[in-house]
Image (cartoon, rainbow, N blue to C red):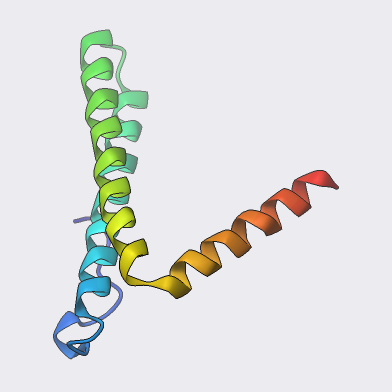
Length: 94
């Protein structure tokens, strides 16, 4: 993984470990998406570009899977995502 997990998982409470493991997995998927899309942008080989972008798309699905489970476990995350969506909508209306 290119980025580091921002917390020490061994110090996370048993109550929160599943949420933090999911967040760490999401970080890994975002790293992979970014890497594959950057590599695709660097090549002129259309077959390689197509493959890299397809793999990046799969990683986005993986991210969504982890996020879906996280949202089942963390109601505060659900609420704050909705607040963020509302803030963007309000900002873009201006």
